[in-house]
Length: 158
Image (cartoon, rainbow, N blue to C red; front, side):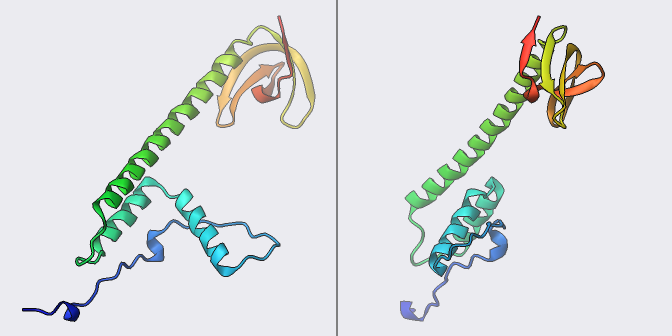
């Protein structure tokens, strides 16, 4: 019979390549090393993608101590967190698309109306909206050949 004390313990080894890399701005105030490390770890976990989380979870399962395995409720909680992160990412994608579509609808509703706003460089402009163009920066109203971002419109009249 094998003595349990002779079995080498397997300790989890999570390498830095498994964690997401983030840059944290430094402040002029000094922090203790443990507080700074805890803040960096919190920032790294907050920006972790679902695939990085899954890699970390698999590494944790592969390297756990067989004599003291992870509590099943902890595993279920971590799996629930992964599912929640994926759902929130999906909600964010849908929200971004909805916001873009709403901006385009708002812009197209101004065609044929006189608007006041400013160009991207701050130059004030007033005129009749002839068309709408959409770029990665969002919708812009075309007024007398100038593109006016919808976010810079200050008034609309018939």
